[in-house]
View 1 (cartoon, helix red, strand yellow):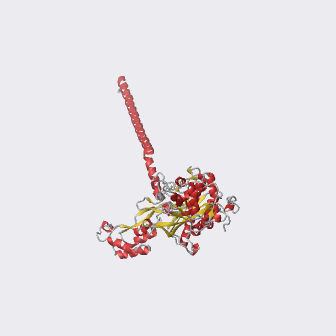
View 2 (view 1 turned 90 degrees about the horizontal axis):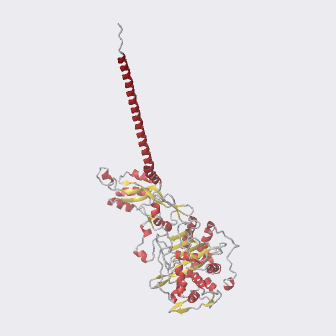
Length: 587
């Protein structure tokens, strides 16, 4: 018998299935939306994270990576990019007496005796002070035994087998040129900060991560620096001088191309004696090698001041006739006798006075100009202030404040009564020969157009006349030994007795030659100074600047001229035709 479902039952069953499908489809859609929403949330979170990393976290990460690649202290170069000071990783030798205790042994700091360890270290480092090291090892006092240890030497130290001998990695400051330009550069002390020279001046800059990536270029030219030091050293040794100083200065910018003070020190190995002297040494006039004679020591620079006095007289209008003759006989001023080192005849004119270097005639010229006028010119030349340069060691002149007496002005006119540094003299000569503009000296390399405007001290016409007179001194006078053929050198000698207890000491001189070249278009000033030269065979047994300082300039200029773009030319010179008849027979 066949059974049939009722019609309403079939309809109900179909409706249920449709309803079930709708619910399943709705659930599926909801799940899909949830999954899509989850993906969107993940994507949004990832996007936020990426944005955070890119905008916030990446900067310090990149910066720290960049800092890790930078040297810990910036580099210093000369004006041409030659490296003068660099930082690099190195080993040091450190004595740590607690190393054995830290390892759990608790016994004595050394396995071997202090004497044996010191002897083994001496075999590795021949210049080591074995006695001093033995004392330190025996005392159990921690500290450095040596700085700057090479990797191969570090391996030999490890082979000794002493845990107390540690080899920490440190950053070392290296001066590739050795002792050259030591007083310009200075050195870096154990605390990581610069001392004495441009290392001290640039300390903050060289340590700044934002700036130390770019080397700092100084104005120094190492080719000129090397030649200056070599000639000064040779000249100093040939006359047994106790010291020497020199500078080469660009007359139009004030840039220092070379600066040397001898004896020098080694910035790679600075000893306490390089920086300090004992009281006994100081009392005997001995200065430490790190003491800068160019910028920090003041001297009475003698007759090198006479051209400055003449320039002031010409510029002020008190000296208008160079042919006028003055008495060269000694005379008394305020109970002081003004005299020359030897008789120079009854009368001299101004060119003859400079050629023969007469104190007496200089006195007459200063007398007519007036003490106040000379003093103001010296102030305009910066002679009453510390020298202008970046170095921290700058000597204050010995300068009488207030109005100058008549005798004070006269003695200053021929280089006594005022004590200044050789740098003062260099800057003054630059102003005298460059057209009359005084500019501060600088150890920073200047780009074209960066030279300071300076201040006018002399008229351009005064400068032109002084260039003639300085050239005449080198051709006919006491500066003949500086007359390098073809380079048109001009300059003035100065030999001054050094002051001491009870007055001037006639057995000790400071000999100086202040020069410029080429005098038909002056570009550079050169100062060479010797402290306490002796009369030797090399100087024909003479102690004056004409025989010891002037020859240094005569040898130096041909060495540095071509490097500075000044080539010898025998067919060029400054015109002396209007002055030559005034000097008579100079043979």
